[in-house]
Image (cartoon, rainbow, N blue to C red; front, side, top):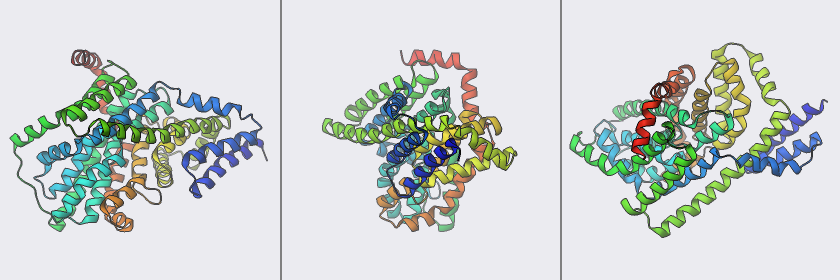
Length: 446
C-alpha cells in the first residue's frame, strides 16, 4: 500500500474511531494527528511548534475577547431588557411570545454569539413564561433552541472569526456584515412557522403595539445594542481591527453590566471570568490540535483528493452544493461547531470556490448555518440537550416538536446556498460606501 494512502487511512480512520468511542474532540484530533505523523515517519518535535503556530494569530485573539464580552453581557441582566424590547416589537401577534422569543434571540445573539448561551439565558426566562401563558412546553423549547442559532450568524460571532482565520484572506468585517441578512431570514422563516402553528393551536396574542412603549424599551436596551454597533461599525469602517474592537467591547460590556444595568457585581465578574477561562481552554486547545491535523491533511493532499472524489460524482453545480450541505449537516450531527470549521474548511472550501463558484464569504455562512442545525440534532446536539435540560422535557419529545422548524431552517439554508445576494448584498453595499462608513466610524469612535 502506498505510504500516503496508509497515512490517510490512519489519520481519518483513527479520528472517526475515537469520535465513535466518544473521545473528547480535542484528544481525538490530537491523537489521530500523532498517529499519522508516526505512520509517515516524521518527528514528533514539530507537534508543539505547529500547535503554538496555530494559536499565534492576531485575528484569533478576537475569539477570547468576544467570548468574554458575551459572558459578561449575559451575566449583566441583558436578557430581560432584550426580551422586553422584542415584546414591544412583535408581542402583539398571534403566538406573540413565540415571536418575542425569536426576535429576542436575534438581539441577544448579536451580543453573546453563542447558541448555547442564548438557549440557557433566554430559555430559562421565556420557556416558563410561554408555558404559563398556555403554550405547549415542547413547542416553547423548540422555538427557543432553533431561534438560538440566529446568534451564530449575527455579529460579533466568534465562530465567524475562527472561519475567517481558517479560510485565510477573508475580511472579518465583511463576514460580520454577511451574517445579518441570513440571520434575519432565519428569524423570519421561524416566525412564519411559529405563526402557522400558533393559529392552528389558537395560542394567545400579546398586548397591542404602542410606539411609546417601543421607544421606551429601545432606550432602556440601547446600552446593550451599542456594543454591537461599536464592534461592527468600528471593524467595517476601518477604525480598528476585529481584535481591537473585541477588546474595546469587553471593557464596554464590563462597564454596562456593572455600572449601568447593575446586573452583576465585582464578585460576579470574577465568576464570569472563571467561566470564560473554562470555555477558552476548550476552544484554544481545539484550535491548537486542529493546526496539527490541518498540517497532516495538507501534506497528504487530502483537500485535493476530496475535491476530486466529490467532483467525480457529478459536475453539476447545483448537486455539488447540495452534497457540500449534506456533508456539513452529517458532520454537525456528530461533532461540535468549532472542530467542524477548523477541519472541514480546508477540505471543502476549494471545492466550493473552484467547482461550485461560491464566494468564500457565502460558503462561510453556509458552514456556520449547517453547524447551527447540527447543534439541534442528535446524537451530539449540544443546544438540543441544553434546551431539554432547561425545559425539563424529554429530548425525544423536543425533537418531535422541532421537526417543523427544521424545515424552516433547511429552507433558509437552501436560500443562502443558491442565492448569493442573501450573503453578499450588504457587504457589497458597504464596499461601495466604505469611505463614508469610515468617516462616520472615525467621528463616532473618536
